[in-house]
Amino acid sequence: MNHTEKRQYLIKRLLAEQPRYRDIEMPDDTTGQKQLLRGLFNVRMPEEIGKDFLQVQDEYLAEAMNEKGVTALSELEPVEDGIYIWQGDITTLRCDAIVNAANSGMTGCYVPCHGCIDNCIHTYAGIQLRNACAELMQKQGHEEPTGRAKITPGFNLPCKYVLHTVGPIITGKLTEKDEELLASCYRSCLELAEENDVKSIAFCCISTGEFHFPNRRAAEIAVQTVREYRKENNSKIEVIFNVWKDIDDEIYRELLG
Image (cartoon, rainbow, N blue to C red; front, side, top):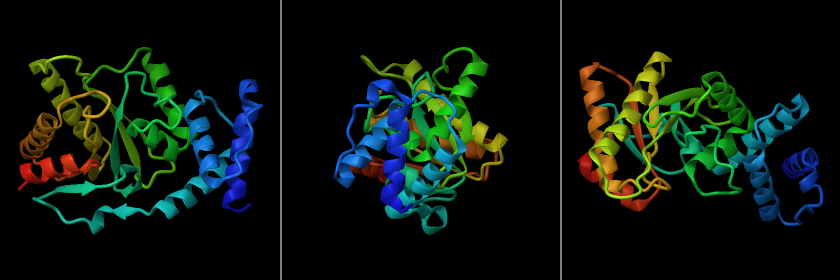
């Protein structure tokens, strides 16, 4: 199968899984097909599927990733010892681990084609990631507390691992507790990374998107926590601050000189 045939195969298989979707017609255009496939990935509940599907999915996602282009840590220049800033799509970054800003359910975003990082990471990792997260949560037996972290393989992403952390949700005035919880997200990820022999980790801007943490204060906490952790633990872990928006790029470059 070529790339288009693989995409259409995946769409047909996912539509056939759910009777309520079986009347959805295949779009004629490539963009429409890609959106439909992503939406079907997003709404699919954690459930095993045949090896034939996974083989086609993995091949399709590898081709899609090659089309997007991958950036390796070795291509980046540090802004200070062991610390980098990189603006771009975190799903295309090749390092040991990337951090996902997850919700307390920890199984990804179920809103079709939503723009959050949780949705993007689960889309390009493939359905194996949601299944792995669901297994972790079933064993845990309760929602993930804010400020903690879990680790899974990266599956079809260029990274080896994904670290999932739940940041604080800001609904009113920012509190000291909110700041402590955000700092805990960074510490928890760093500790869990080193426990798993992770040598490099890329942090997204945790809690600043859908969770409404003020961008500048979030960046200040991120930089301070990472610097303190590396110094206090004599850690050699390399840290990439991944930003998407121009405003975050400006803030981090100001903070890191």
